[in-house]
Length: 274
Ligand code: PAF
Image (cartoon, rainbow, N blue to C red; front, side, top):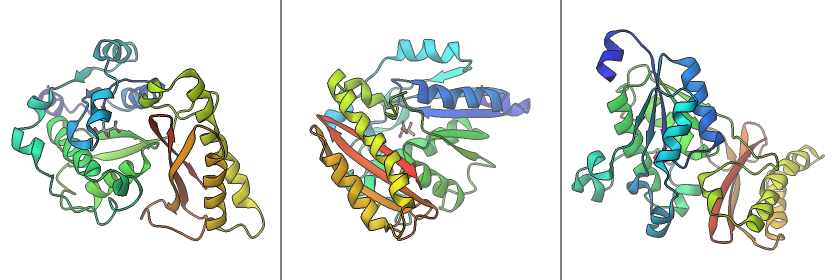
């Protein structure tokens, strides 16, 4: 199929997903459908990127509903391999060798050792298999997006994917402000209401950052304190970093604030650009 597309000069758009699709994924797929002749969507809960067995087991799966949604919004192909089809047992059990230039040492990388190894392993494999012209990723996983940009532009793998263009797409939010996530399915109704305080605080922090003499450190701490003051929420980290290097910054220019919060048993992430 890929060969046929290449032979006839059709452009391929790829949207890698782990399924349990929501409007956020749909926005990526709609864009891929619009901007390419053919749209591939992969649905694969990638075991090598989970460092927590329970999280892997509990990750929501509903391929039938996903396939229906994908068909209704115009995706051409759904690729839903099993782990055995994707990896040899050796690949499943060894770390993918990749130089992240430090991008995996901060935030999610620090909290979830090996996570980004698994992400790069699966995404690079999908790129080799599907040979997309464009690949679409959500900005909610901002660190993941930065690492994929690095992989395609600067790492030892750069140049091996042809002229592949990586496209980051804005976070899609519920009307309440809550960032859409497959993990939201695991929140109770009450927890979902509580979780709204996360995005609300991030949006407020845009105003705090504009106040005279506001420093990055002050705003960072105020976000942490405000979210932690909400019963039922516990901040794991909130870091304001440079959008490219992901390193701490002391200016709001080109900065992004990335937050991880436990809401009951569910770990939620969100971010805001200053
Ligand atoms: O963002 C995700 O859902 C996953 O990390 C991805 C990019 C599909 C790789 O498994």
